[in-house]
Image (spheres, rainbow, N blue to C red):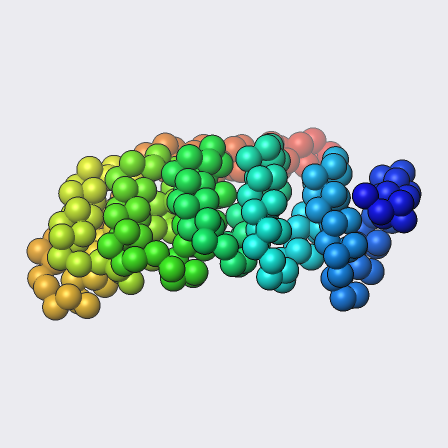
Length: 241
């Protein structure tokens, strides 16, 4: 490593977090040369404070070099902070490398955080590099198998761009198994859009959203508590007369 760069990193590491962020802002306003690239990579690799790592990652976003994308994918494998993983998925999804599609597919299926999985799904759609049948298969797999709300919502919002008659039937089966009222409504809206595009009869009635009993009971309890509080305040007020 260049001695000047090594000294710069040492000074950076010993600085307060606010100073580190100011230094990164200053770098972002300059032309990103090889020294700056190496410096930013070292910050992402070594820095402990997640907001500083995130800032460095965003500065690297416009880098066109494939080796930088590869380096960030390597960092992702060891990252534990969900906020940093989310930014890595977003930034890598905007970069250019033949390995990015496989990287995002793996995240969309395997990452433990549902928001990070959703980001990977969105980026795969935005990149538009997967064949239509491949992304359709992936989205349907997520809709059928993912347990979290966000990845399913994201997949349902995207699937109309790739759906065919067969995938509509798959969605119908998933719709019948779905027990969450609002999710069933979202399934119905998605299927209606696809059926209209394909000029097919959906053959399913729109589900009626029911008020969940627990939520109704909670609402009633809150009202009773408010009435009791008002009555108590009124009674206490009468003590003064």
